[in-house]
Image (cartoon, rainbow, N blue to C red; front, side, top):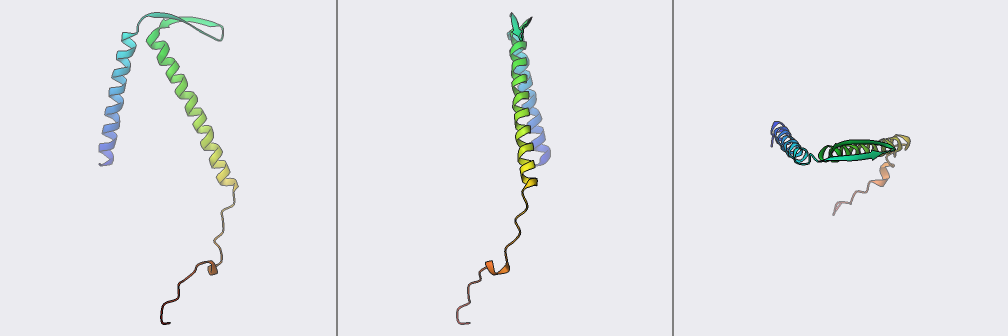
Amino acid sequence: MTRAGMIWVAVSAGLILLVLLIIFILQNQDRVTVQYLGVAGELSLGMALFIAAVAGGILVAIAGAARILQLRSQRHQRPLASPGPASTVRHEPTPGA
């Protein structure tokens, strides 16, 4: 598959997911009271779940970025292993030589 084809498939899948998300939010319009750290607010159930999902995704992204940065810093701190002496490469003797 070409790069343009892969991008087209990814965009199409993203659009389908967005349509499904819009349908979910529209079908869950019941008002609920949400409390967070002493602050209370009222919004639709679908929107409350959407906000919770986005907040969870942000937390996962932050944790993943922190781990990537940690691994990169470890890689830069470690000295690169120098290649061993040429004698470590073993050549099999040719028969009859």
